[in-house]
Every structure is written in C-alpha cells, then in structure tokens.
Length: 82
Image (cartoon, rainbow, N blue to C red; front, side, top):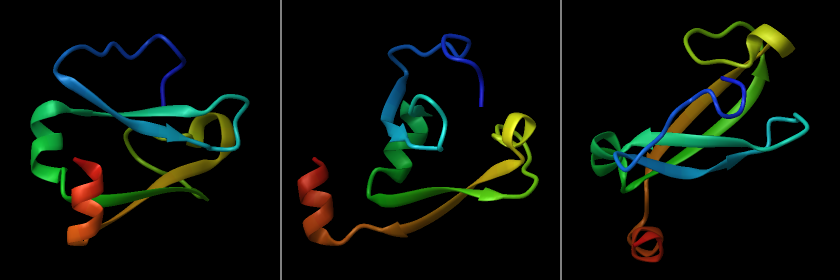
C-alpha cells in the first residue's frame, strides 16, 4: 500500500473500487487493464487480516496484510457487471 498520490495510474489501469481497511480513508484498488480483461468475470474479495504480507501490504504501518480470494461470477453477476 502506498501513500495517496504516489501510485500513478493512467488509461491502462482500471479502478476496481475502494477497500475499507480500517484506515482514515478508503484505499483505492487498481488493476492493469490487460489483467482486468483476464479477471473481468471473477468476483474478488479482499480482506485485511492480522499477519505479515509480501509485496503491497498494509503490514508496515498496521501489522496486517491483504488476503485475496476469488471465484467465478454467476451469469447474473456477470451481466450486472457489464
């Protein structure tokens, strides 16, 4: 997790939404457009849990990490997402 404004995004990125990580402000979640095309029919759940993480994580300031779970969307969910 980077401080606000330090992660540069552009037209090749897709904002998936905001994560309520128990911090003062929601944390925006981004994915590259090429990766999004592969994952667009997948429901992602991102939790913040105690423990050490690797890569982009909230562990440095809070002692927590992101836990990502995924599943394929149902046909109805996929239709609503488009």
